[in-house]
Length: 499
Image 1: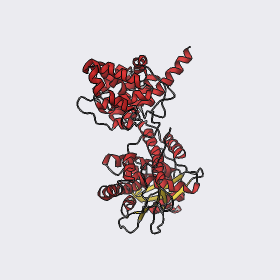
Image 2: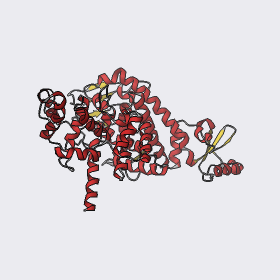
Image 3: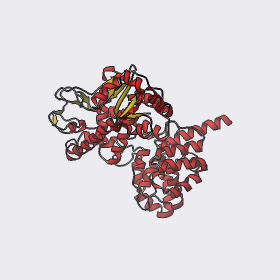
Image 4: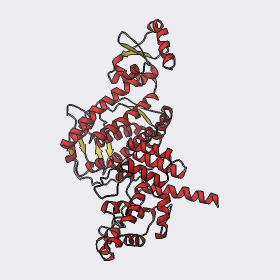
């Protein structure tokens, strides 16, 4: 996966003082600290000047990956502008990986391994001393990114809580007790005598819940109201209002506290964002923040060098075998109606550019279709310019890149439009018909429909790919041009094996 970060917004030559936006991220009720953005030390550096305050509990594992933070206080750090964005992107890769794992229905042990692998892949830092700083900075930046709507807050809260849950499981009991104290969770350590008095009842509950038998070391009692999940599933012994919780169950009442704190912080951050931060940082941080929530983190596919070029004579064949559903739909509509509205022309035209259709062939392809409805002269006057513009030959001569799945999913097709993501924008009946026409088997089709119904649109597309190609796609489909590229590779390998 390729991702390049640039400092896209100019650094002012004078210090910009704002005493609200970072405070909002940290969920502090009393605004006393000052936050200064300056380039006095080096260009692109944010210097955070705050009164000294004890940081949140944090641990760093032996492999250099920060394992646990509560994110309850602001970092006293210097952050380069490019690191502000890069760290957030790295964490976003972790959270999206977790989201994909959950959507695929991975089991707890599989998720535990997935989270560990994601952290190793994306949350390391060349300097071991900076690993924890990266973890803290990336969390607070994404807290700002995902505070801005109910849907964004819900997703971020769920993914961060899941990440915290699996990190919590990886640390020892001393850390558990420390975090419980910092979160203000009232608990009591069960004494040896009390354990012996209740041994039979505790063992009975453990056996009925298929849990390990409790031991004197690492048994706590908390108010039963703290562990509704364990009470509902009858996994704890309750006496006189206390639930007796084993060490391996502590996560069940720590995570809700973490989640509750983060939920409140996100709401407060959103209030400060809309009332002040967005306007104050409109020339620098606001564009980064607003772009991160919908950013695509893979190759741009401006030209698929691995697949090469396709010509006009190839289009019909590769459309049947290697176009994702969104592009097959646009292709078939264009063939039938000899016209697409602007949104469809942009989505499909840039896709064709990315799969290797040269400008001259693109002009010939679009003209052959449109001229049947609007005439060749009108096509040359009204439509040819935009095609040349997409290829960087007109206007600002920008080399436009194909749309990612994220951008397509978030589009809003109107009446008469055919662009967008079929897994999101089609009715279930139309989606079934389209998938059946592609050749998806009835069994796989039901799995795809279920994922689309649960709003896992990219996973639905991934399952479609796997069903049609009889091959797994562990990375998932994140871009229509990735679908095309991976499809072509599989088909070429099959052709080589049969020769």
